[in-house]
Length: 77
Ligand SMILES: [Zn+2]
Image (cartoon, rainbow, N blue to C red):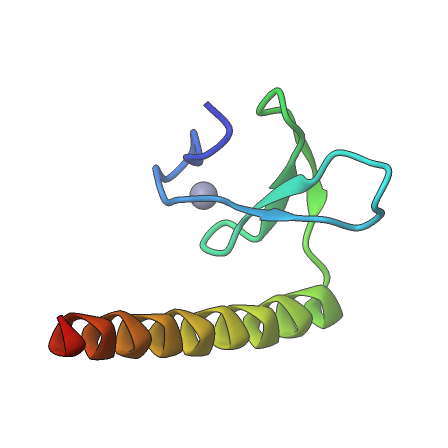
């Protein structure tokens, strides 16, 4: 399964490079990309790693915000 790295069993993250192409799956721990069939394509470059870490931060921030909204909704009910 592509969702989990076959080398270290960490969760992979899908990274979309082009809208009309399938995402590549990155393992942050091993630092490589796999395609949808779990075939490792190439190593992650330093620039890409920095970019992905930024995206992850955004993702985590968004998740936190959503969690707060849900809590507020619960309070209203
Ligand atoms: Zn890995």
